[in-house]
Image (cartoon, rainbow, N blue to C red; front, side, top):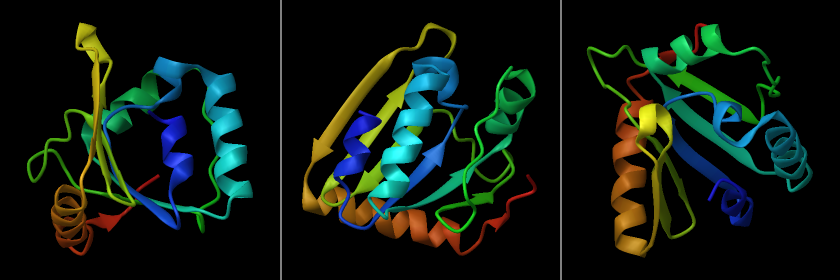
Length: 132
């Protein structure tokens, strides 16, 4: 599902729950990052406190260019991001792997993607500049 985001035409919007490399491994994330940059895509994500916690626990941190990977923060009291989600083209995906809760679903539907893009942008406009 993460690799599928490379099908995006221009940008990927997402809610980031945890550091993805803890689930798919550092090598996969490095390959994905290189392909994402090579395709000229942009990622905008909103993360909350659980993501910061996962970074503290991480043994390895992958660097992402700030002009391509644009992040904003919202504290848990405003939005508790408890799973990973991505929005691109006409796709809305949800997935999780943390604490034994492993699942993933992709919904290919323009109306679902459009509504979720609107929700994301509403929150994006209210989110803070990323503290990391």
